[in-house]
Length: 539
Image 1 (tube, one colour):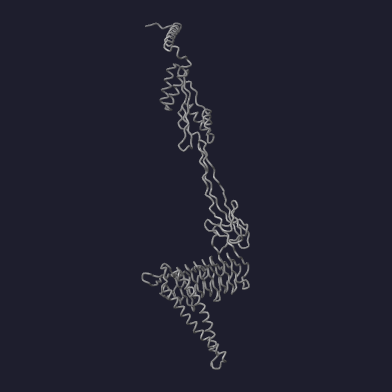
Image 2: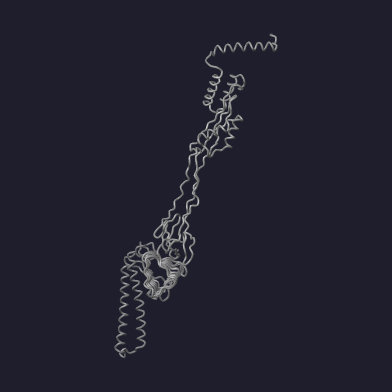
């Protein structure tokens, strides 16, 4: 056994060994590389190795051990600096960082290092300093940091679509905001304006907010829906405002707003004002006396009772809030709808529908589509009703007044049937007046030979006129039958009675006639085209 060496002997032995090893190393290295160059070469190789190895923990540990062995100083004299790598998401909305911790005496990655790299790439928005600090601290604690999000982009915020506010005036009122459903072709509730009024305004409440990617590229906010309100006749656009150029009625149809000229009467219309002919709409805040003629291209709206007048709209609706007491010579013609409270001893023709809020009495009514008396009393008593499609009422018929119901008529037959009904109604009135006068003569004059020549001539002419009107009524009925023989156009049309069907009501479809006895409703009367018959059934 060799004796242990004393400390002095060990030091001397170590010094000799060290000198010998150094001499051997110097002979191997020669003069090509000095110590500083060797260190640089080693550091470069370390960085290259780290890039190739990535952030795999096992490989880094192996490399650390290798460096420690090579340095024989546990890495205290040789080391590699920490490294980091930035990566973008595919949509460029995120930037992540992966950090490789230092080896040996290498310097760790710092927050400043990462921020400096971001600034060099001109990335300033969405940088999360706290997330960078957390990632750096994780690396300093010896943990691997992989794809930590440190920059976050912001998606653009869509704005709210603009909305339209509408304004108008009631009769004689101040301008105020109104809802959209008050506009349109609802002549029964017209909205007025004066020249210079703002009748609509586009409100842009929220235009949205632009965004940006993690790389700082701007992302514009999605475009809001554009205002799709078109300024029609007599409306000008000023900024976001739609301004009326004339006084009149506001019409809003889908994406279009316009002002229609209007003639407004704030009192009754008498004969001294007749005839009234106007291009536009006419509003009467009163009644209309007998003998007056009112004709307009657009809507006609009358608040109080119309007497024996003539009311014609060539392109719009006629609305009689109270109704018409026609005195056997009142007449209404509407290119579109007729809407009325009641109709009495009058003639009504509508290019679309007739809508009664109370009902009708001894009147001639013709509609290319429907006749509807479903509200209020909803009573139809006496007269002739002709509809291209349906006739609906709560009650139909009356004692002492025959009611003729004709439906399913083709549009080409409507004008002729309407003309016949009106002529027949006039003849009935004249015939009734003549017959009553003849009856008075008969009661007063027992012996016609005692009449003066003038009286006898008058008496004879009255009896002749009675025969003439009776004959003309028969001819009108024959003409009506000829038209109806070929008029069945709408087998889907029906007649509905909701409450009661009174006596003396005749239903006609084409050449078919049907008279139903008095009955309680509800009931429906239809035409069966397959069997060519009228069917009545309870519902």
